[in-house]
Image 1: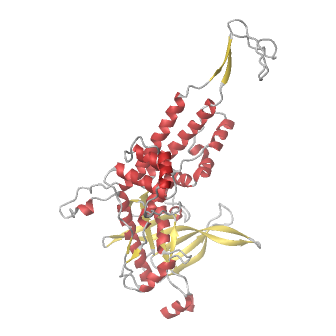
Image 2: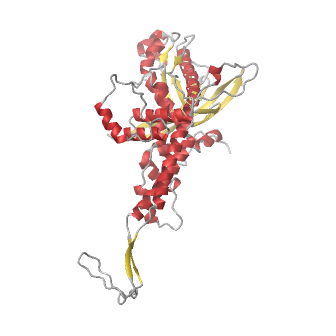
Image 3: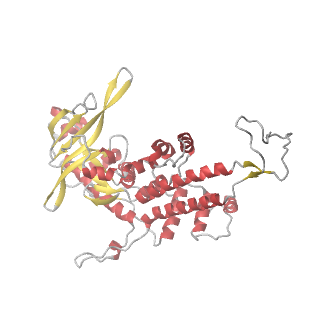
Length: 472
């Protein structure tokens, strides 16, 4: 069956299968509760009323959000640097890259979070339509016309076509989902769904019909541009192929959902364990109408008369299951930190052919460094497209901070703990306890006492604090 303009392609559908779990986790507790049975199954024979109560009290340990914030922020812990080969006017435009007040640095920081969270996003390097108002570049300059960047999020990419020419893969068609704002009365607005279809040297725009089943309408007919290519650049988390990527933190996302479910179980058993059950042994039960048998009146001044050899006592939970649940949660939390920290562990390069470089510096890189280098390559393509719009020969290059990586997983996880603390995402006491578990601090150290003593003995010189962008 042929695809409609608004349909996702099979490649996008394959990637989209992993998006709901990340979207819900990044949405926090509220979004996970809305997702309901998708991530917190209802137990067999569990009453719906009980399940809804359990769901309404469940809370999320935001491991994915915290790790994504720290990891995507590391390349931007120092200012993005433009090379000397970047034309001056493009460098100036980068102070307001999207014409919404965001510098190229902050724009790219958000872009990295999206790419690492969902595996794929992109940048459309657009140029305003000036029509007959400008006949020369000088006219365009007076009108303030200049290329600018449009952030294309993961779920806006609907599908594409490509070709290989001269050994280079390039887009021949791209469909992007958009929204068009329409006035609704004096004070309100409504949003109409649109799809922009781009091809080399042209674009067109389609809009949804008045009713869901109505065919989409061509509202902007094919319009020519001055570029002979589609001005779109993909950005990847973990690149799987051209225009295909996956989140490098997907395994962490699944562990986070497991923690969400296990935490709910733990909260439930804690609730049950806190309420002891009064049991009477060796007594007659009342009849169905409530008469006869042993009647029980509960109160401080009440007296209970029991038959000979009968007994009455509170039955309480032993606590064994509670302790086991706590240990299971701690193990899961440690697994999540370890899984996130793996991005920082320096790994040996794959086996190389005789014609490939054997340079150790090229081969031994952590996954986050590889992702950052791929990101830089895409960013250079963005600069080149900006140059092409204004007929500059070269757009130049940009560099991100890349001095990170750890020799072992223990070092990497310890580093991640410090970054989580620096970002204000965990407490000082948790930081010390986690470092104790990794052998970085003495096992007999008392975290609370150490924090109290640290307040009385501050460092002589303030230490630099790593920064991280806000969660997506």
